[in-house]
Length: 168
Ligand code: GTP
Ligand code: MG
Image (cartoon, helix red, strand yellow):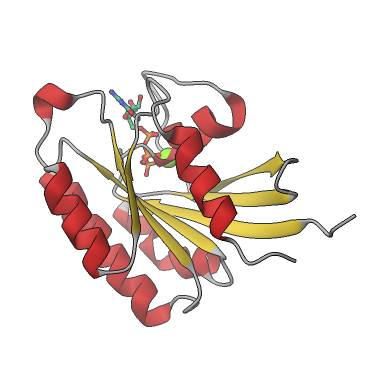
């Protein structure tokens, strides 16, 4: 039997972009219209038996006053999901600044995914798929649009990361 790959995964991104909702959808299959803003960070795990992978997930708080804590969560992480909200151009700018911070200070082998969340809110879209994809390609990120509300692409986001992990 091959050894289990244990992978630390961190979610970063603007407050309200949907980090906790994505994790809750992925790990527990739940979604709440009124999801409480995260204080500090939350920790959850998810095992993928078919790939023999265990994710140790750190869901960080997006509020600016927690920014200084972030390195504790991304240090040693095998993967980072940087989340923005497709209805907010500001949230994409915040995502780009997280990418720059990880490029400067993160693990150089880190798998980085850019998630354009709230894809169900197409009528309020403020960031085009093309612009986000072009930015992701330039920076070597894997890009996917998700909806924690409808569950669209949520499994695919984490599954893609799992398949890219170096195996134990
Ligand atoms: P912080 O913990 O403050 O950093 O926020 P967060 O990034 O964890 O966002 P959270 O998951 O708390 O979601 C913020 C709000 O957006 C909540 O009211 C969610 O219900 C809503 N939300 C999250 N994901 C989606 C989505 O895919 N679609 C829609 N329509 N709403 C979403
Ligand atoms: Mg949260």
